[in-house]
Image (cartoon, rainbow, N blue to C red; front, top):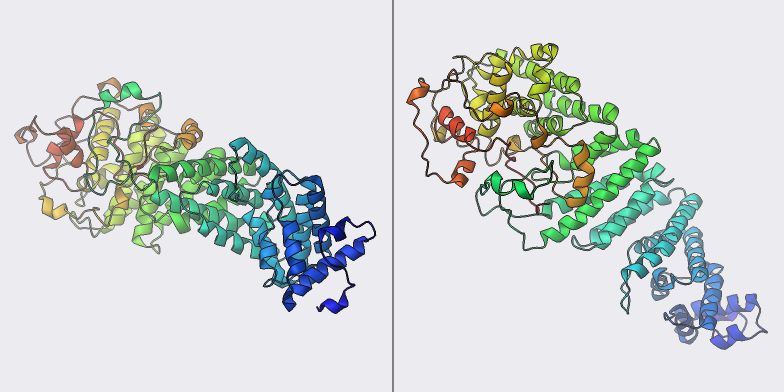
Length: 604
């Protein structure tokens, strides 16, 4: 608009102080200043910007002038132009006025009025509000206490404004999630502001805005947490799988229930620990959000969104260490519903012949780890899940006449390993109940089939399973367990390298300090497992287990072999006969070892 449409009222501090000027006169003065800059006259507009940019120690009169200008701008939004007044809009930060409630309220009213005026202003206004989720850069040092106080003043007003805009413009939540995603991507992986940002996203999800776009927000958060998960922790790409350490040397430093991930983990020089600490805080925020959902009877709804995110982002992602525990914690809050459904969904994925091989193998690895570690899962449910796995593997054996071919039967071998792994943790609770034990009668025929799953599965899992099966009388270990001595070259590619997920137990202990305190009460640590052999667990297997003919002919292992070399044998590539491998593993501490993709973070 041209300046001739306004009364001759200049915009300056004298005008605002002049008692003869009415509120209407001040509104016209502001509008004139906004319009004049489009005609090349910037004097009045410069005065307007000066009033808008107050310092921390501004006096009472300056604050009153700012509040007056903001109110005048609120009724003059039609005169605001995104191009010519960009610098004015960028000055609208609530954080700089957190100690001035009346100014913040006037600023929020201005943003709401501007957003509701025209669609072209909606996204810029939403972006202005979203930017206030994170603190700006202050000229002077601000203490942590001061920041908390500022945040307590700013964030409630931001959320109130977002809800008001969403009420006035029903489609605004969809614009909002797009802006939220754009701003999330701009936050560096080591920037602490991500914690505050995610906290605000979860608050939105748990509000009326979440009723419209809550699923998108949750998936957005889980995707970002997965990104942090993949860059957190340590780098073990330059060494062997683990550097073996004696348990006796570390047990004195462990609390009851702790599980030591064997190996001196290498610190990541790229700042992995910083990322891990941030991810730990995000996990705790999400745990609290899940608790809130449970208290408001929304956990069932949120669980479905979580599982969809898990299936899309986490299930087939290699080396996830922490983000999967969001699912674990949700299941622990509602074992009878969410806990059962998670296991059932994983099993359905594994049993689906229409699903790709890698996804099926990953699903059964998650299932095995979940059934083993979930303390909240009753033995009856675990047994029912295992029975379905056993029946599937038995049916496969009935239709297959192959010898050992790991590369051709990967899904089958991953299912067998899942069964053995779960039984290492749950054997005793199953064999003590005859009804449960009777469900596994076909397991012996599976293990003695020509496919020889005991040769392909991890030796550590196999040896522990056989010890417990013999001691617990799960089945009669007989001469049917005879395995030909295979050369290393024949199995050198078995589940190694590319086919790595089959040796991945994703619910190994969570090593994030704060998150672990939430997980541990519902987590089944190996130190808590009651094995079938009890105190006699260090005894060697009965001679009835015969490998390569006469067990007496097997050579004794070299006493000088380094312990780290022993640990390297825990792969799917046997370097000796199965019996020698088993004997060596039995001389290790009886604790189940970590998977080939253990958490790569500092020890807690």
